[in-house]
Amino acid sequence: MRICPKCRNTVADDVQTCPSDGRRTVTREVLDAAGNDPLLGATLDERYTIIGRLGAGGMGTVYRAEQAPLAREVALKVLRRELGRDPDTVARFTREAKLLSQLKHPNTVTILDFGQSPEGLLYLAMELLEGEMLSSRMRDVGTLAVDDAVRVACGVLRSLDEAHSRGIIHRDLKPDNIFLARVHGRPDDDVIVKVVDFGIAKIRDGEHSPGLDPVATQEGTVFGTPRYMSPEQAQGKSLDGRSDLYAVGVLLFHMLTGQAPFTDDDAVIVMAHHIKTVPPRVREMVPGARIPASLESLVARALDKSPDERPQTAQLFLSELEALAPEIEAARERSILAAEATTILSVNPPVRRAWIGLALGAAAAIAAVMVGISLFKHPSHEAASVGATPGAQASSSAPAVPPAQVPIAPGDTVAALSNAPATAPDPTPNAAAEPGDEIDPRDRRRVIVRRRTVPVVAPAPVPAPSAAPPPPRHRTTQPYQTFEGM
Image 1: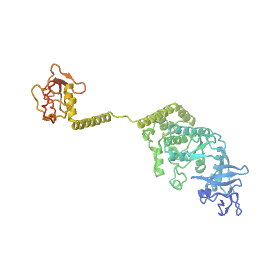
Image 2 (image 1 turned 180 degrees about the horizontal axis):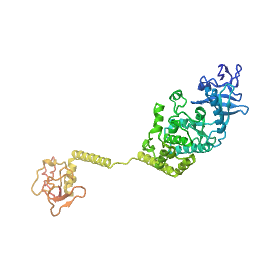
Image 3 (image 1 turned 180 degrees about the vertical axis):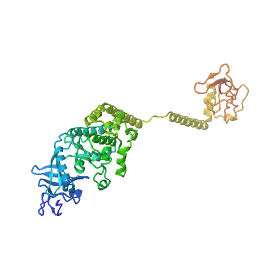
């Protein structure tokens, strides 16, 4: 279903013209996007039928239009109605439009036609581009990659180089006047930079701009422009191409840092900063970005208050930017390597030695507990395993009396029956070494292993139920190790 923008009658999808008033019908989506725009569906100067609205600015509105009799779609910029009522403005428009139509550089939008309708509306017909404004890209991503920002600036400077050679100054460079055009058959990120709206500010303001007009700013005439105006333009001085180069410096600063060098809700304050305040350095604004120092210095020179201290031509500015390509590429590769290294470290974090020691300590503690439980449950087995000779082990097959209940007789010896750990410190850690002492390599402390023989009574077998006499007690000896720390 299609709708007439004027009478709002609905017609079938295949009906292109309203039978009531002859207006071009549009879809509901197009109508909603344009709102109550009175030109939607109308034919301008009997040649351009407006079929959609693309955007609006301080100077006018841009429409999607169909050009007759070629039936090709174009971008039609229609200036504000009051501009067509001033004879001086009309004369400037005609003069500037003739000059702009001579610009043929691929980085400059092509002017196809211009004129004034019988209703007094001034218009420019331009090539229709598919893509997005630089302002939209910056709103989406914030800061551009260094190589992307330089690539955009280089495209703008190539366009300016041709325009300046013909005596044309843009006067209103800003993200809203730079288009990133997609080309059929190329990847979406392979765009062509297109500069639009050359000379529009001159058509509006004349040869000598009066500088910033706070009233006009509030009305939207120069909305967004103060952030990118050169100091001499803000003061109403005579301009040359170096004023545009200052704006390129502001664009580079904005693309690299995510914001213009001077911002304020009051446009007059912004322009005062451009006139008097030294802008901050790019790398100070984004210390983590890999921006070469040479690029930072070039941006600072472009933003110099004096036109004589800036790059003097667009071609010189472009040459300096292109000379930085190897350094920018090296910085980009370092950034990629750093990002990959960060990813690897985050996926495989290093194991700390403290955690290894803690894990080993926990395992040792668990093992010690298990051994203690085993000794507590099977005391007779422990005594037999620690005992000395096979004969003694064989004779102890019968249940034995706990060691604590067996008296020690003179001459008895036994191995260490204590449950204390082998590395327990000696009560006299400063004991001197004696002949035969050994150093225990398992302990980090200097430990003397001293072998002694102490008498002890072996466990006695439990008497049999019969009246037979118990077997004789068996005595044996086993070295007993004590540990004395040094």
